[in-house]
Image (cartoon, rainbow, N blue to C red):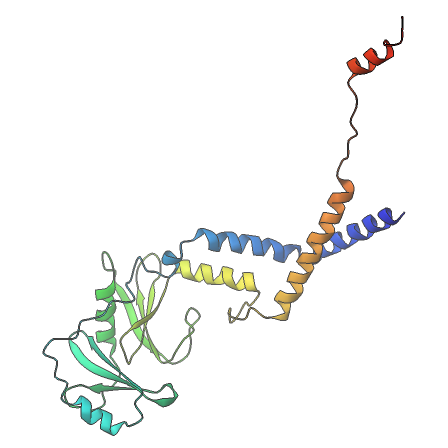
Amino acid sequence: MKRTRLQLFASRLHKWLALFAGLQIILWFASGAYMSFMPIEQVRGEHLIDRHAADPLPANADLSGLLAALNRHPGTRAVELLSVNGQSFALLHLRHDKVVRVDTASGVILPPLGAGAVTQHVLKAWQGPKPGVQKAQLLKTEPGDYRGDLPVWQVQFADRENTRAYVSPDSGKIVAVRTDTWRTFDLMWGLHIMDWKGRENINSPWLFGFAVAALILALAGLILLGKRWPIRKRKRPLASQHSKENKYVL
């Protein structure tokens, strides 16, 4: 009697949980399969743009104004010597994540990098035949495919992947590369962690609730499998039974 009640309870629980969490479980499997299949280097666009490409600092770079710049900014925590398209400059990292870009020769504060310098820098980092550039714009609000420090330069290319490179206006570093492959991957990641907007929160109550429901669904399925698994009794071969019957016949 207890087995029948347990089986009935597991069957009803399995049915209703499958209706409740079944679609999300399918999305978990589908998104997980896609993310496992796609090479992460292709998702990041590393086959298109070398994000770590940097111009070497000229050997004869004039650093005479660097000391004066440090004296004017006593709270400097770190100094980076960089070069973009042949122009040398220093990046002073101050407190509260503030950054100042100064000329190494004069020590004066430089304006942010312009669209032309940024576009040329990204094209130099492009690997393979260079595509056409649609536009470069300085963004002060986050677009849909970039979540990082602002403001940031967005350079759009006219290629099959709809590539967009995001470049820091202070350092000239390529901070992100976004393609259609990345956007699909990002969508799958959002579906996987059930964070459809920010796609960063893996501790949402939605994810926890559906994960618990999926766990109970699996346990109920195991109970049903155990109750319905066919158990076959061993049957003795007919030949051995016949020999035993004739054993006592004289």
